[in-house]
Image (tube, rainbow, N blue to C red):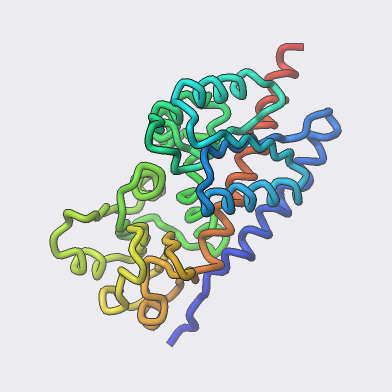
Length: 286
């Protein structure tokens, strides 16, 4: 029996960050420091933690973290005004609006206000469309992380049957499109899928993105399949039941330490790319 491969997200993230150091140095020589603006509306403790983690990751790499914390009473119009100001700020290269926002805010309208060239978190409908068509620069960070892990471990999607369990606009749908663009045959399942277990049993690649702890069971996994668990639930639990799935899979991501660390590294990578594009634009206008 072949040795099982644990897909170590921390190793992948470290590799991505290392590859960015020289690029950040080159930007510095041109007088540019990549800058990610993060917007947090309200006082959700989990959101505060996520924003702080992203900010710390930026600063460790030499990327400026511009943190904007708005009160929970903020209106849609006030948030749009903040985003528009960041769009117009040449020193800001990426904008991240932390989800969720308070209920009085039109979140989709806020996302759509982010300029496409600064949509480093892949949340606009235009960015999603470009990703689906195969020329998107900044796919949503978790789908991008899944592909980064596959590349790092030389997991080829071409000709494989990939089953994605989940259809959210920033995870299930875009990762389905990305895998399709890599010549996988993709089945996207969701809460209305009947006989879900039978679909998963056919998969060479399983992407767990349903948002339910330990939902995907080992009995559903085909022998030798690759399991990529994008779930992160209370108690550091993924969407796939790790122990039972690991018995059948040839490769599997742990939770924590799998897709999560790579997702943050993709945000950093996209911010650096945005800064490089900004530098190219400046150079071309001189």
